[in-house]
Length: 278
Image (tube, rainbow, N blue to C red):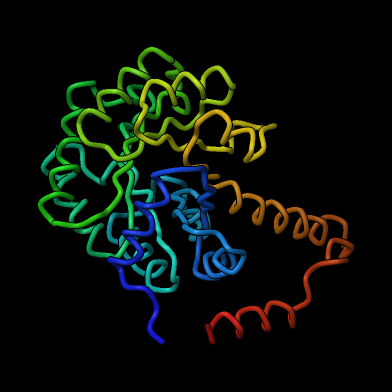
């Protein structure tokens, strides 16, 4: 029996944004994506940092073509929607963003995000008018392609040294008016901040990054009106953290104690064998 088509995945992803609250975890390779799908998550999102670190690169060092190949691989390996963390669209100018968004759509993803981070920590955010023009260009590219891809617009001030709530809300409201389907401000973390942003962009859905908003459960976050919860590169860092601590124990202490209690190889083999049969 054939799996769901790309169009099916896109319709399912859009439907998830219409009501309730869902978690969209972030795998960094096919194995982590397939395992998350097996746990019953309804959608996945890529992580720029998790993927970059798996390649031995810093976040932001992955090229456009590398990212596109990664999205295509994850979308092709899973039966659930995949959202692409398309960073800044790999271009500064709106025309370049639009052209690259079209390439991103062609990978088979069900959604994509564009952020307003310039890549320069000294001047981290694109000028308001340029940031808005870039969002409009992405929206137009999606519409011209004639697809149901969910478009998320992000403002990055809280994670790049510009933690200004008024400016964050100003940008998110403008992005919503410009046609973003979902809004995202990574780095906000208090109940007051979260509820203020949710109210400001309503009725558009808001994505909360849980890497920063510690202490809340899914039920807590749903009660604040958040529609989508992602974890960014945190799951990838959890895996890397365990690996590094274990390797350091071997290198520095000659100890293999960190191997105690880990998942048996047979259990993973059985999981992935079963996953391939589905």
